[in-house]
Structure formats: structure tokens, C-alpha cells
Length: 210
Length: 237
Image (tube, rainbow over all chains, first blue to last red; front, side, top):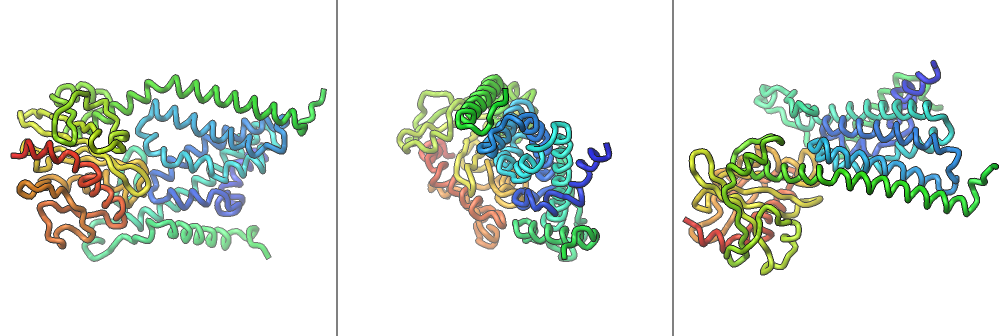
């Protein structure tokens, strides 16, 4: 039981997919302009990763090792298309926002990375937990980056269903404060990821290599 | 019996069976959900058309309101003549690519609560990453802009994607397309239209979204709206 808990909690910090495993950096750069997008992306990745992990784990003893990467891709792609189709039919508004990211989920190295590193060698339930945990760790970092970038880049926080909420008071702008345009551009995400990694390493001794 | 999962035969069989199962599953889902998806697209189109004349609608009442307010649908050609066809079912993506003389151009006439009539022109153009489109509502004089809605497939969030925000769309109200009888349309100015001195036909481009802004401007000029010129001139007041 404790071991299972660890599967979920360790990716949040000590084994974080973005900060420590360095997986999923691409989407962390691409879609963190608004908090809303980060949340939508995280939920989609959570769904796809948990189920892809379970399916992969169920099939693990039957898959010919030479074509396992292809099998992984097919499973991920099928799941993503399935999600997209269902959203288009039942939650059209959400699907419109998501459509840009569908391709990103398929190519997201974090999902294939976990399939390859974990699901191929573990039982379905553990794989499910691993998927949830890693998606959680991914979501956590994505939302932090998006929050920083949106607050300093646009002066707002956009939440699904609530729309754009201003966080920088108008008085600041009246005094000559300006939004930082660099924050909207992809390099800013890299800088923010760098700072987060720095903070995490200086707080956790285990992560410091000699 | 222990199967050798690394034999060539097994690998081929595995790949074939997997592909067939996945393909069948996806095809079935797509086929089953198609009607629902088509309806969503149709309702959204109606909502956008209504929104360009300032009527808000929900997914539930869009169809009803569309019937009530959109009183006439017209299809015209580049010479400005009305031709046969249903405006709503035209595929702008195809018309955009068509040769000028073959283009079928849809147009809607809305009659509002106060009895005033507006002409709504669907638009189609190219943005930075994909298509941009929208609806431009004109006053009865076929010259003054009453309202505009834009949308896009994949413009950059926070930059080009701002074209579907009220702040950008609101700028179009009151601008005019013609200078006397000459079609000049609307221009997006980098650095602001006031600085450029074009208050009649100018709007502010989006900072950081220059290519999207220019794509949108082209849509209002040579890329698309230009083909309506003949029809507009005929009705110009």
C-alpha cells in the first residue's frame, strides 16, 4: 500500500516528470501562456496517460518487443482521437480549445516515456497509479509556469468556466506598470522552468549530483 | 503452448490485428458521433452570424433565433448578380479556393427588433498558422460596419488569437468600406490607426500579432471581401 502511494506522490516532487525526468518540456513551453490552457492540457494528459498505461500493462506480455514503440504510439493516438471525438460531440466548447493540443498530446514524450519505463514491466493497477502520479506532477508544474507567465505577461488569470480574471490592479497600470511581453513568448517558459528546477534542487539535497 | 513473441510471423500478425481493431473502433465512434458533431458546427455558425448583429444566443435557442432574425439568404457571384443556391450550406473553404468567376458568395439579411435591416457577409482568410474567418455586419447603406465577429483555427494564444476578443472586434463598428464609390475596405495599422491618421477605415493591429492582423486585413480586401465589391456598389446608398 505504501509502495502504491509512493507511485502517486513521488512524481509530484522527487521524481517529477518535468523537473527531474525532463519529460514533457515541449508542451510546458508551448501551452503555458494561459492558466486555462494548462489546466485543460493537464486533464487531457491525465486521462490519456492513465488509460494508455493500463492498456499497455495489460498487453505487456503479448507485445513483440521489436514493434513496441509502434504499439505504444497506436494506443496513445487512438485514445487521443477517441477523446477528441467525444468532446466534439458532447462538449463542443471545450473541444474547440483543446483542438490545438490534441497533436501535442500524441507526441508528448511524457506519455511514451512512462509507457516504456513503467507500464511495460508492471501490473495494470500500479501502472494506472503511475500514470495518475506523473500526470499530476506534470500538471502541477504546468500550472505554476502558466500562472507566472500569465500574471506577468498579461496581468490576468484565466480559469475554465470563469474567464479572464484581472489580478494586477488598474492602479498599477496608471502608475506606468506594463505587462512583460517576453513572458508571452516561449523562451520565458524555459526561464521559469529553469528557476523552478533551481529552487527545487536547492531545497532537496537528494537531487544534487556530485 | 508458449508463443515466441519475437518471431516474424507473430509480429506481423500482431501488428495487423491491432491496426484492424483500432481502425474499426475509431471508425465506429466517428460514424456514430458524426450527426451530433455536425449539429454543433451548424449551431455555432448560427450563433456567430447572430452575434455579428449583436444578438446573443445559447446552444438551445440559436436555431429558433436564427429563423426569426435572419430573414433572407442570398448567394451572389463576383459580378454582383444574385444566383441560385442556399447561403447557409455553402462551404467557404471551397469557395475561397475557387477561381474568382466560379465563386459563390453567401450573404444574409437580418431584420432586427427595431425593424432595421443589416447585411451580414461571411468572411474567410489566412492567418499565421491556419485559417481565420468571421462575419461582418453592414448597415442598410452597405458601407458602414455595424458589427464584426472573428475566429481562428490556431493563432498564437495571447497574440494573434486576440482577434476573437471584444476589444478587437468592437473597433470595427462605425468604420466604412467605401470612400465615395471607391472600395478601400479596412486597414489594420501597426502602432495604431490614429497615429496613421486613418480614422474612417483604420483599426489598431494587434501588437505581437502582425501577421494575423495582416491576414485579417487581406481577408477584408483582396483575399475575400473584394469579390463582394460589385454587389456592394450596386446597393450602396
